[in-house]
Amino acid sequence: MKLLLAASAAACLMAGSAAAQDYAYTWTPAGTLTPTPAAPTLLMFAGAGDLYEVQSSQLVLETTQNPEIRRFAQMMVEHHTKTTQDAAAAAMRAGLTRPTPMLDAPKTAMLNALRMYEGVERDRLYLTQQMMAHKEALGLMKTYAETGETPELKAAAQATVAIVQSHLTTVERLSR
Image (cartoon, rainbow, N blue to C red; front, top):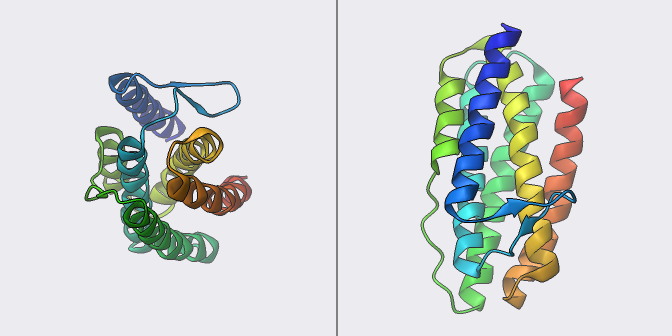
């Protein structure tokens, strides 16, 4: 079981690395991206991340019996629906058209892996994926908040940093 979870996590990481290379971004040791993504790319990445968070959490809610994971997953649906709305509002204020959120290949692979399991196995894989997804989201939002080009999106990214950091702290606690 542990081997299967590790293989699944590794596949997701490799898919994520491939996707990042497609966009010519690299992760710094500080957990930020270089170069800073352009506003449309930020919106695309953030939309994919939020959509994954909502869909993966809805999926785990179908089978989890763990009340803490249930509360966390419900919070993910609520918070990531709100961060999607906040990004859309910031894009509108900046005069940008926000792309319709779509899952990228790594997020699709992660959802497909979750669908293969139920119960405790799904819970474990969900927490592993949440850890990876929130670290990625935190790096993306920190990067844009610090060095982004569009003030409205920088402010939205800064507000999202605290939310994502809180989620990461929670998922780290749940994973112990």
